[in-house]
Image (cartoon, rainbow, N blue to C red; front, side):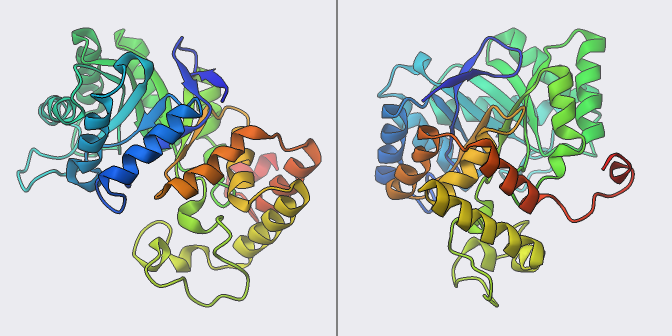
Length: 326
């Protein structure tokens, strides 16, 4: 597996990031350890989790595994925002919650530092200066090495970058956005901001909760029972069951057949070759899924196949003012 710098930092991360969202939940500890070992045996060193994943269970499973490893070999990323109890200050991005949350994450991870600490969501109730200064203090204290954000809009990201520069705070090193063949809105503002200001890009849900896995085909009228798409969320059926999605799925299937690769491998590989992307986050539930996804690092899509996927996945019409540049 190859390695890339995280944005303009000197930190080297593997070109695939292992998402630990399933650990301590749908994926039990034994299978989680197998996934971790398979990923690291393949050269992966970048692992992403969050304090709210399975109420802290993901961090705990990862932490017990880290105890058996050389900690400095791995880049561990986690996130803060979500509610961990019913207490009013146990959510959001206030200084109090960030400080409490980082200490709780450190305990669960069994480590004295976090490589990449990310704000999971925007918080309308807290001044952004308060959140960013708290991150800077954590970097200065040594509890955190690098900082980033996830799920920010374009103006929110640019404001955070500018405030860090204005106040001399630790600069943001990365953005973790939704970006897939079915979700290319990040190209309108987020990716240009990251390229302009030197942020790494760690994309989540590259298969869009199964929509790009090969499990969904034109003609289906409902999602498989028990799937993520059958439950409420940003991946829900009525959001994606449309002609644009089926056109993307059809072309993805055709390109995968021509390339001699699986649909998930091609969907992930397309992301790996997109400008500005540092590492897609792959979050396999089982070792078998991981074995397939790791194949995305073993080939390159030629320009003509990239262009076919680009064309099929391009949104039907950009909103104002972006369509002025189309």
